[in-house]
Amino acid sequence: MLGAVRVKVTIDRRRVLQIGLAALAACAARRRADAPHTGPATAYRRALVIDALSGPDGDPHESNPDALLWNQGVADAVASGITAVNLTIAAVDDDWATMEKAAAWADRELAARPDAFLRVLTAADLHAAKASGRLGLIYGTESLAMIGEDVDKLDAVHARGVRIAQLTYNLAGKLGTGCLAPEDRGLTELGRAAIARMERLGITVDLAHASPKTVDGALAAATGPVVFSHTGCAAVNPHPRNVSDAALRACADRGGVAGIYFMPFLRAAGQPTPDDVIRHLEHAIEVAGEDGVGIGTDGAISTVVVDDQFRENFRKFVQGRKAKGVAAPGEDENVFMFVPELNTPRKLETLAERLSARGHRDARIEKILGGNFARVFGDTWRG
Image 1 (tube, one colour):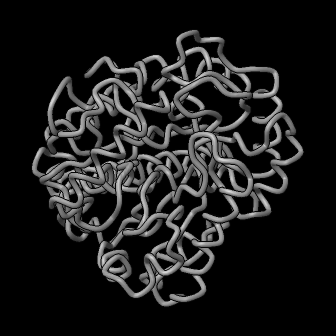
Image 2 (cartoon, helix red, strand yellow; image 1 turned 180 degrees about the vertical axis):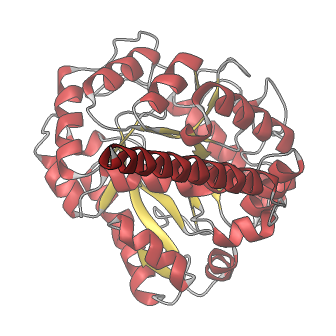
C-alpha cells in the first residue's frame, strides 16, 4: 500500500512539474511576443545581410583591371553593412575565357583589398565576413553556357570558386529554356544531369530567368533547396521575369528562397519605388512564408550617379540588349534599373526601416535581409 502511494505521489509531482514548466514556457513566449522591437537599425547590424545579386561599384567584365581598386566602390562596399553578395562572373552566353577574365578581375580585388573583401566558399565564410566587417564575394553565374554540353566541366566551375549558378538566361540554352524564349521546351536531360552534379559538388541551383516549364522541371529534378536569386511576383505584376505563386510556394516547400529585386519589372511601367519592392515582398511572404523570401537587388552597392554620361551609357546598354534579343519587355532607355529612393549603399537598411514601420518584426526582417539565403547556402554548399 505504501509503495502504491509513493508511486502516485511521484506521478503527481511529475505532472505538477510538467504543468509548471509549460506555464513558464507560455509566459516566456508571451514576454517575447510582447517585447519591444530592438529596432531596424539593431536588426540590420545583427543580421547576415546577403544581396543575392549585386556587387561593389565596378564591372567584373571591365577592360580596365584597376576599375575598382581604391575607388569609391571599396569604401561603399565596407560602409554598406552588407555581409555578402552574389557577384556575377559569367552572364548570358559567356564562354570559359570570358568567365575566367571576370573571375581573375575579382581575384585581384580580393588580393589587393583583404581588409575590404573576403572570398566566400563556405557558409562559415559568411560569418567570417560579418565578424570582420568585410564584404563577402560569392562567385556566381547567370548562365552555364561555358560548359557547353559537358557536365563534367561543372567540376572546374566549382573549383574556380563558383557557388551559385543559373541554369539559363532569358533565351533557350543547352540546359533549359529562358523566360523570354518563344517556345518553352523546359528543362533538358542535360539540365537534369547538371542539377545532379551541382548538388553533388555544392553549387546552389538558381532558377532566376528560367521559363515556367524549366522551373517545374528543375523543382522536380532537384533533391535539395533551389533559389530564385533575383525575381518578382507574377501575381503582383505579370511579367516574364516574375514567377508564379505556384513556383514561389514549391520553391519554399523544398527549403528554397526567392530574392525580390529592385528592377522596373516590379511594376507595369515607370521607375520602381520602395512601395513596389514591399508589395512584392509582402506578397511573397503571404505565399511562401517568411522563410522563403530574401533580397536580390540586381544592382550595384554604390549610389548610381545619373548624369549625362550615365544616361548615354545606359542608352547604349539597353540598345545592345535589344539587339542581342535578351532585353525583357519594359526595358526602356529612360527607366533605370534601380529604385531611386533606395539608391544608396545602405539601401537594405532603409528597406529594413520601411518594413519595420509596416509592422514586420525584427526576426522576420533579419530572415529577409539574408538569414534565409544563408540557411540555403549552408544546406547546399559543401564544406
